[in-house]
Figure (cartoon, helix red, strand yellow):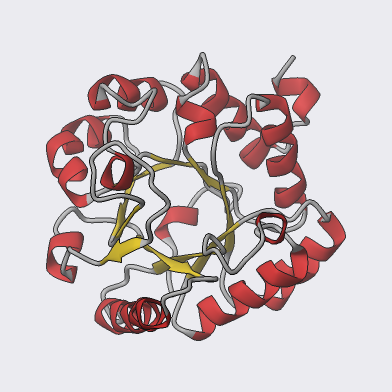
Length: 265
């Protein structure tokens, strides 16, 4: 598999996730999609992860910034009411592969949600990952799988538990992932083993903005030192006061090997 995303001098990439509108709507900090996109692009990321409609509407902006497009294949949302989170587990894959490939992506991303109560929904999720992998095979576009433990059967503290993440990553590439989008577990030595044991590249997912950009950058620094190929991260960037500055800091860490102290006060 050729990975155009990692065709950089460092072999790594900084990807900013902007696909949140698919499940959250006009989420705080992302009410104006064009303005948020422009703020991110000003920091010169290597790629942005977006929905296929977003890619069509704002493709000229993305292309003019010489930034790669990654596209999300599925929808995860938590209520049938727009803008609400009622703890529901709603997942579907509404976009066919032709629509995804039409925006010329360097990767197609889908989630694999563990810990669900609904066994049939979990089965559908696994089936969709396998089917998407088969549909992409031979196109040159890798399948990026994000194995997450969001279901109610997984206690919150286990979402980044190293052994749990290790199991989830193994299942994801066994089902067909060409790239993993996995949480950093906080144990650099153990994460090094996880990366080395994976036959496919590992990238680092984000999550809700924690309020501490410095801590997020520190986790990315440690994960890259452990062999990860860079972040695919969203809210911690575009909900920050200066998304461009955070994006540039990530680039210095991922590509130049900079320390957190060198890029952030």
